[in-house]
Image (cartoon, rainbow, N blue to C red; front, side):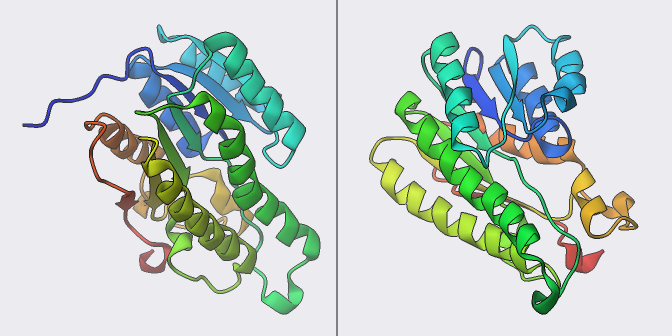
Length: 241
């Protein structure tokens, strides 16, 4: 049997942590004893997260951060540096989708919001986090099955996730020699609020729960540091709903 690695006292940053997979990850890592910095675009939306995390014994800070903003991102990681001086786990989870639209009807503003959040935001957070990370650290990028499978009417979302997959693969190559693991989280359809943006009537009862996704991530994070897992894939895909 492989000995389980303890996460107690590890410092973790989770973006998009006010609901869905991000909040489930925060709760799961709090149970593992991590010290957390949770972030979301609207600080007020972190109220429920703060209420739930306050029941745990972990240290945590909740910070408003729009990952599209280089200034916001720098403020987030400056706070991590001042309060913890290091970072062990970065989870790039913040993400948005858009209403279904063929390419010829997709508005530029919608395209930019999705690309800037899902792709550029992942880049900005990673770049700001790296000076705080050392051998044994882990970066998890939440990519979704859309990083692998195209969906009609979802050009911006698919492009952002395919781009984030490419970024993740390059990052893994660059950080391997530094002893920092880079994991691609690729969940299938998961019961989160993102569906309200393009399929409000989606059959949520047939989807993964955020807690299930979080459990899978924690399982991999607690494997030995030399574990060679690069992707965390969970079904189902939207195509089987």
